[in-house]
Amino acid sequence: MIIAIDGPAASGKGTLARRLADHFKLRHLDTGLTYRAVAAALLAKGLPLGDESVAIEIAQHLDLAQMDKSVLSAHEIGEAASRIAVLGGLREELVNLQRKFAETPPGAVMDGRDIGTVVCPHATVKLFVTASPEARARRRTDEMISKGNDASYASVLEDLKRRDERDSQRTVAPLKQADDAVLLDTTEMDIEAAFEAAVDIVSKAA
Image (cartoon, rainbow, N blue to C red; front, side):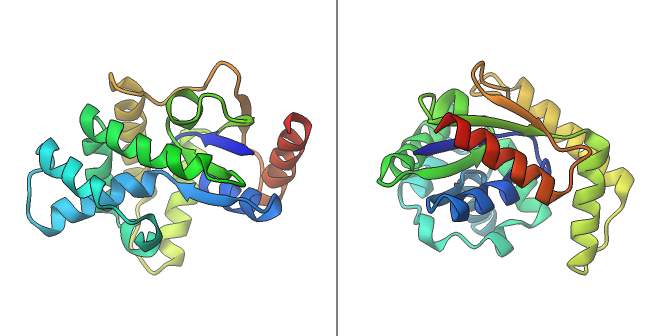
């Protein structure tokens, strides 16, 4: 079973994906972390984000088991990841890596921006998880403050809108809902309601 979950930043797709993986006894991959891991390596080495050949070389030696979400969640890494995600050759390398993960038995829950459209177009079930920019900004701001970081709702909202535009307007694998994906709008839902709705969708499709 392959469950594809796409959606914009801070829509709740990551939390849903982890809970669905636990519920259905599947492995989970946050594909965004693969881009963040490459971006973090480029930043650490002081290399330009536009150097695609170096980015591809880093991707070829990426160990999915060693990706630390707590480290890779840093704001500057997220910004850098969004910028390198437009590199076609790098995307091809990472998509191949992600596909291998998804197709390894017993399957996986994959979350990202282009799972249902590019990485796993033949997934068992596809979800497109979204919420209003304002709701997503509130969640991201609350999350940052809970971790002891300074956060401004206005700046977070502006940042999310900028990333949405960049992700949806890029020419290579833009963020969009797959034609056969089920839309799950979590604007008015807490995580429990969203999880129950997602389990119901998956159970009917599986």
